[in-house]
Image (cartoon, rainbow, N blue to C red; front, side):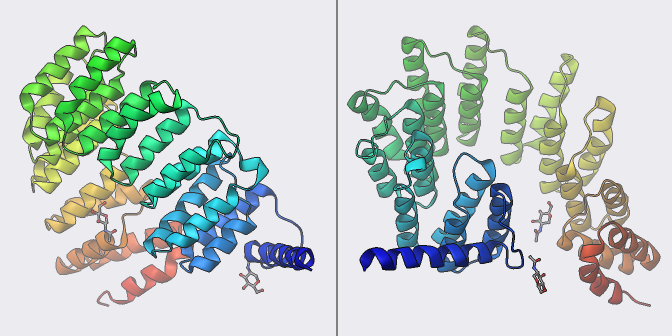
Length: 395
Ligand SMILES: *[C@@H]1O[C@H](CO)[C@@H](O)[C@H](O)[C@H]1NC(C)=O
Ligand SMILES: *[C@@H]1O[C@H](CO)[C@@H](O)[C@H](O)[C@H]1NC(C)=O
C-alpha cells in the first residue's frame, strides 16, 4: 500500500511537472528546454511550494550552467521569503539522487546553504560527505570557505582554514588562499593578509595577481596607504608586475573613496608609461566623476576613451546618461542616449523619463518624440510602456 501510494504520488508529480514547464506542449522537452523554462518561471515565482515544484520538475543538475543559475535563483527567492525549511528539505532530498552523490553537487549544495545564510547546514553537508561515500577534495573545502563568506561569517573562515586541512587531510591550493584573503579584506582585517602571504611562501604556493589585487582593494578600503606602497613593491619583487588589472583595482578603490582626481592621476601615469588602459579603467573614472558631480570631467573622459581604443560599454552609457540627466545637462544626455540606443542599449526607465521631462522643459518635444520613436521601432515588444510616456508629452 505504501509502495503503491508512493508510486501514485510519483506519477502524479511526473504528470504535473511536465505541465508546469510546458503548459501547451504535448511533446517532451529536451533537458536544455526544461532548464530554460524552469529559469524563466523561477524568476517570476515567489510562492515557495511552486518554486520547489518547478525545481523538482526540471530535475536540475549542477553540471549545467543554466541549472546552477536556476538553483541559485530558487535559493535566493526561498531565503528572501524565509523558507529555510523548504531549502533544507529540497537540498537534502537531492542528496538521495544517485547521480548527485558527487563532490561537484555536494560542494554546490554547501555554497547554496552559504548563500541562504544557513552555515550550520553547510557545515553539516560537509560532514556528511563520508556517509554519502564521497571523498572530500580541496574543491569542497574551498566551497565551504566561500559559503562562509556568502553567509558573512568571517570568523568561521579563519577557524576552518586553520583546522580543517589537518582534520580532514586536505591541502589548500591557491584558490583556498585567495578565498581566505578575500574574507580578511571584506571584514576589515586586511593587515592579517600579510601573515597569509608569508605562509604561502613557506608552503611554496605562489600568490597570483588576484591575491595581491584583493589585498590592495582591502587596504584602500581601510585607507592604509603605506601598506599599498609595500604591496606594490612586493609584487615587483615576486615577478608579478602590476598590470592593468591592478591599476583598475586601485582606480576603482580611489573612486569609491571619492578621490577620483587621484585615480585620474593614476590613469595619466600609466598612459605616460606606455601602458594600455581598458574600458573598465574609464568606466570607474566616469562613474567616480559623475558621483562627485564633476560632469565635465566625466564627459571629457567619455570622449577621450575611444581615441585610446577603449570603446564605451552599456555601463558607461547608462551611468553617464543617468547622471547627466540628474545634473540637468539634457543636451549632452540626449547625445549620449541617442548613441546608446543606436547600439541597442536603452537606458533604464528612470533615466529615459528624466530625459523626456528635461527635454519637454526645454521645449524640445520633437527631440523627445524622435527618441521614443527610435526605441519603439527597435523594441516593439516594449512599445506599450513607452506609449504611456509618449501620450504624456504635450501635443
Ligand atoms: C499557452 O496557450 C495559451 C492559450 O492558448 C496562451 O495564452 C499562452 O501564451 C501559451 N503559453 C505558451 C508558453 O506557449
Ligand atoms: C537606472 O540606471 C542608473 C545608471 O545605471 C542607476 O544608477 C539607477 O539606479 C537605475 N535606476 C533604477 C530604478 O534601476
